[in-house]
Length: 220
Length: 156
Image (cartoon, rainbow over all chains, first blue to last red; front, side, top):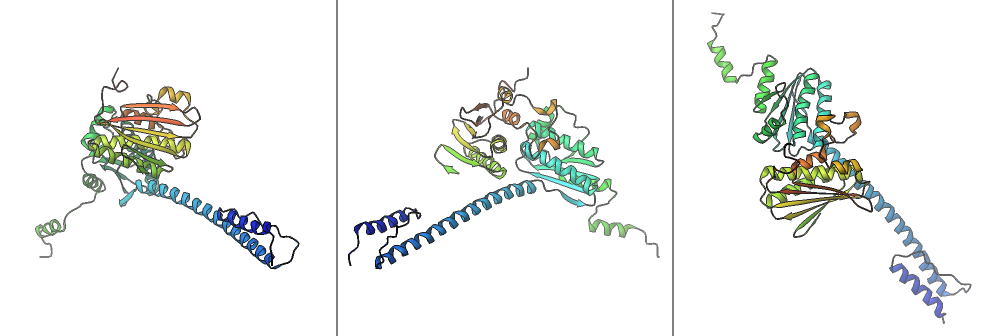
């Protein structure tokens, strides 16, 4: 059985193109019905399958890429959410512990989130703790004072705690009136002050027992 | 993120990337002998500038390079570039103080509108430019010690 050289070359070329990811170049099928036609058909079928697989692969890659973008987006959202945890430590007492880098965008987000929560929770006391912040830009520092004032406007007491010496300097340089904002050294001081304000008495159990012991017993 | 001996390149696409870039800058500064406060300030400059790139261009590239007793920050994006007014002002004026921060409704997930001013205050050199083929480049230099006599920081 002899085969035209051109036909063999056709098959070789199609396979060579397939090696370079080009599956669209089909082998032309002639009129002659012989055994070699089977090979040509077979190669064509294979090429078709390969091109279909390639398209599916590309579509999947696109999907994965989109999903990746979604994940990144979600990650940034999570970051935003996590960066302003507002914790209700007691009925009506909210704390906002601020940790890490505070840029203008984050401080703006904080104000929005905090004011919303104050209204939502009907908070009476808010403690903004900036122990975990080492540097504040003057504008951001100014923004914190504004945030405290806004909280007061909503009818809640606001304490600013944990101000570092460096930030204290920044705030003093601002020359804005901080007298309307209560500042306390530590977060615990803020909590104590809030509890006192609420008429709560925080004692250790030992102290309590001592108090009981010292009280004259009425049943005797 | 690629790493070479003198420059570090961070591609920023999301807010998380911006914070990451800030943290990388802070670490680099600490290695170069910056004190904690100055390193944090450099970090803030990087976060502000990269946030701008992401906000206005969708993505950007932040290049950090070590200089003698300083770190140079270059943030490049392919966005619309700076309007002429911003280019002239280059963060000298601040929205806050005069007009106050952007109101919440207008902000739409943006900052206070004083990111450039913040970057200017915390760096020793800030240059804004638009690329001829579109996009913006901001270059900031943070020295190991903040020069409090910088022209824009001196009180008139």
